[in-house]
Length: 229
Image 1 (cartoon, rainbow, N blue to C red):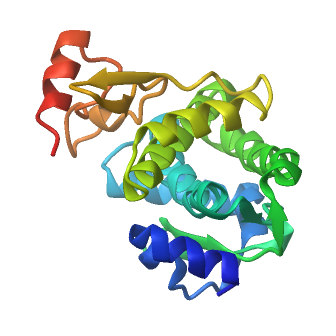
Image 2 (cartoon, helix red, strand yellow):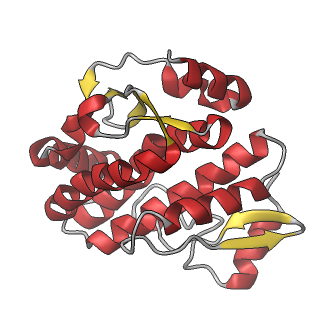
Image 3 (cartoon, rainbow, N blue to C red):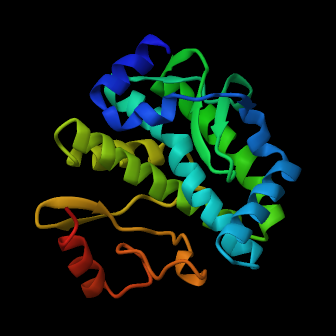
């Protein structure tokens, strides 16, 4: 692994499984409509869901979180990220089609990588929206929530979740108008993401609404978050 990745994993141990590989798939596959269509179909079968939009949303909810974890963490820990261009990166994908990790790309300063990161995400979102019949703005909203959640995770690893709120807000503000602003909810002094997107898991045969689901009432959501360890 690169030095900045090693230093990041040392500070954020939860990253370890995401950098183990094998990284045998070019990240450019993430922008291939045929490959994306297969992932959406796989997700639909696994979740017993025939609605392509629901399946595509579920797949992207997981994928975007994994795709952004190392980038967000290394940015917060070292101020550097791997070149986010898909052509510079490789992926590890599980047998069920879920993204397990993404690595590669020479180290660049965070500020110099934001435009390339946004372009890389757009190159995935545009064909994914097409093959899953999902609005692009819905997929960008998921990106915002993935950034917010991962920033909070890294902040917690560094000893202060509020660091995540500041970093997420600053990062998203520099990524352009396609992304809604991240929102946070303080629950007993602990910040949580106030989601602007929904994974749509409750529309499958697998589970009901998540604790932080935006479709829950504010009171119900807060009560659930108060019980989170």
